[in-house]
Length: 267
Ligand code: DGL
Image (cartoon, rainbow, N blue to C red; front, top):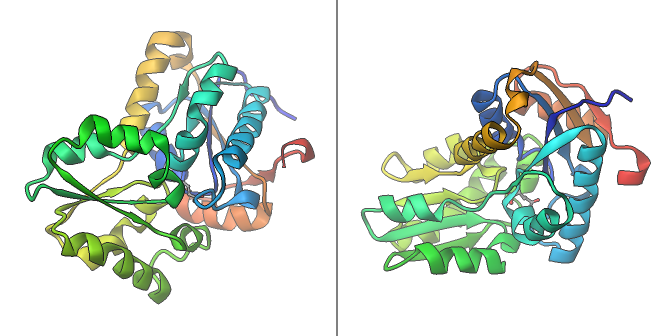
């Protein structure tokens, strides 16, 4: 197997992290990227923090074995469950992500911000701490979205079932007066066109993909500056069915993507 030296390793429960990978490619165009979709274990949203912690550890070990010297947890749910543990176990830059509460609180006009995320993220201590730190006087209304991640995993970005779920999950937030909706799961930016259609033009949608890519860029500049002269490449792996993953990833990454299954020891 080809081992890349000095790659950026990125993982998510499935294909959602590709929404972050797009921003990483833009911010750091000449890097070797290795992406892992944990498709055999998606969704993470309803699973225990211990389970997600173990999967995150396994995927990080795989990425480091392949040559990654920086990791992006392209998943809000895995960041909430595992970022602290990964940082204490692996001595390389590990960039995680969390719902964009801080910018949303700064930008709301109505004083109400809606958060769409997985149950795992919304119930985490990390999310509670985020609200404590940034919500202030602003009312934060949260909404778990079971089923939405699965729609993205199937490549169903615009069908009737996806629309119906989006209508159901956004209606209570709009009824409370939210003028900003935080897309607090990396799968949801792929649904942004449909969410926009459902909620109308006056609602602002925010996510953290670009901010995460800039944070990674800063870390590479300061901690791994020799890496800035690299050559662009991208490799894709899944713990699930490689052919099925290739079909969806090609749709979301634009262009034909070759996907390999993870070695047995990491499944
Ligand atoms: N994409 C993930 C996130 O950002 C997790 C989705 C899931 O597997 O439930 O939270």
